[in-house]
Image 1 (cartoon, rainbow, N blue to C red):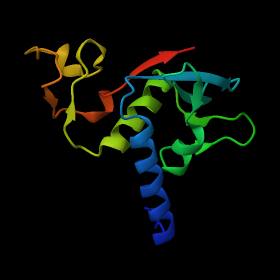
Image 2: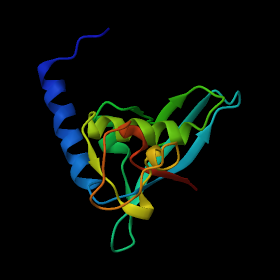
Image 3: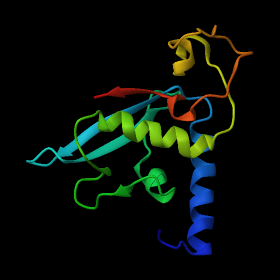
Image 4: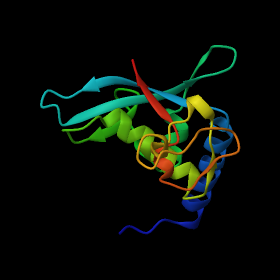
Length: 144
């Protein structure tokens, strides 16, 4: 395990706080795969959201500052290694886990991405439902 300096820990905490604010009322994070290696074992994925005034907002810089992934200097996205699964989903899942830190979160009704609505026993959706399950499922992922 690598040691992280106090300055880096403060930068990570600040970036996670900024991500929490940016994603406070967001239910979908879009994943744009900008590069795939020839072997298929490496991808660069650009996470972004669409703001209320319908403008895309690239989250790559904040995600990299938060220590969730490494920003690619060459392709402009978050570097993701591996195969055999949806790496865009893996990135969105890691963002949800990092900003929520295991804390309960409020249901967003029909837009809620929690797996508690799908798995048995079913949980009704609504604004007064608090999810205590895995916070990685807080956001839905859409791929471009």
